[in-house]
Each structure stands twice: as C-alpha cells, then as structure tokens.
Amino acid sequence: MDNRTIEPIARIHTDFPEKFGIPRQSGIVEALKGVIVFEPKYRNPDSLRGLEGFSHIWLIWGFINTNRDKWSPMVKPPRLGGNTRKGVFATRSPNRPNGLGLSSVKLDKIEEHMKYGPILHVSGIDLMDQTSIYDIKPYISYSDSHPEAVDGFVEEVNNIKLQVEFSDELKSMIPKEHHQALIGVLEQDPRPSYHHDPDRIYGFYFAGYNVRFQVQGKKIRVYDINKL
Image (cartoon, rainbow, N blue to C red; front, top):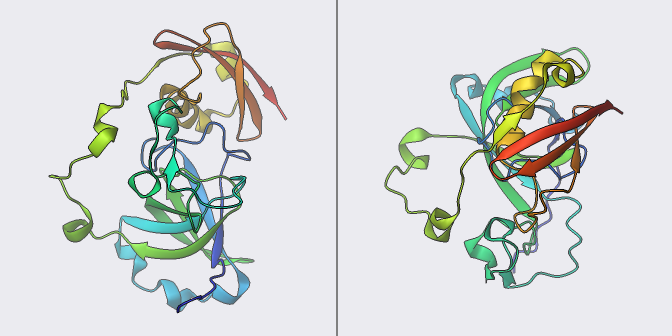
C-alpha cells in the first residue's frame, strides 16, 4: 500500500489573504497575478531548465482553511446554489480526500531573485496567499486542450458577467495596476451563489485593501475601499 507523504516545493504569493473573492477557477481573471517562491531545498535553477519555453503551467497545490475533518462522497458545489449535491469527484470542491487543487496559469516570466533564487511570475491565478505548491508541470496544448470536451452539469450554470459600477474617486484609492484585476474579480460576482440580498453590503480583502460592494440585479457597485 502506497502511503507516501508529500511536502511543499514552493508557496505562492497573491493579493488574496482570505478565500472570499478568489475566482472559482483559474484563468477566469487573467489580470490576477501571483509570484511562486520555492522552498530553500528546491531553489536550484536546473530544475526549471526548459520551462521558459512554455506559455502556461499546471500547479498542484493544497487547499487551506477548508474546515475538513473527514471527506464526504457528496458535496454541495457553491456554483449550484449550495443546495444541490453532487459526487465529490464530479466537482472541484475543496472538501476532498487529499485536499489537493489543480490550476492552469500563465507563466509570465522566470526571474532570478538575489535572495530567493528562481521565482515564477504567473497570472490567471485562483489561489489564496501563501498556498502550498506541491508540484509544477508544463501545460502541453496538443494533449491538455480538448475543444470537444463536454462540461457536464457545469454547462447549466449561468456565467454572465456583472456590470461593474466603480467611480473614479474610488478607483483613485487603489493603485492603478490593480484596477483591471479587481474589476475582473467583481464581474464574476464573488458572493456565494446562494446569497441574493440586494440590500446587503459585502466585502473582501484584496491587495491590502478592504473592498466593499453591493449587488442589485446584474449590476455590482463598489461601495467603499479602505486601505488595511
């Protein structure tokens, strides 16, 4: 019986200190950036030789803060309103037997850092800050891309983007380089799918700011932004 243990090879640094607001899948918000810093024993540049020729990579990582004591064969995917049960292996729920996640992200560049050795700059992330990375593999288009793929019950989910109302005054409160990413996150409606209270003010932490918003119909309005 194979009872191997695995250890993180790296950790990713992102603008999300909490899971609220993180896109539900990788690649949805291409403007979201992350930096992968390897653990000391894996900071050998030879391990990345040839990776610079790939545009995208796979990240195998570990869910954190999932409040999971034991696994369940049935879960309630948030995208289905939190009331419909599906088999855990038919979903991407964080409540899994081994708590492993899989993301395909764009490899923007490999940098040789004076202190941390080779680090990876990636975009299109869907990971919380300080998430452990257990493995990295190149994305290979001829085998990893399946244009004819069928999306099962996910095809039934409404993925219409919300219209973001974001005043110039509020935009000026957050660095310009974060505007596109923040708007992309808001367009996806960061609320739990079973929340539909038009009067409620929601908030999440992003890039060192507390972003508060309200959703009414197909519009999402940024209500306030405060620096932490």
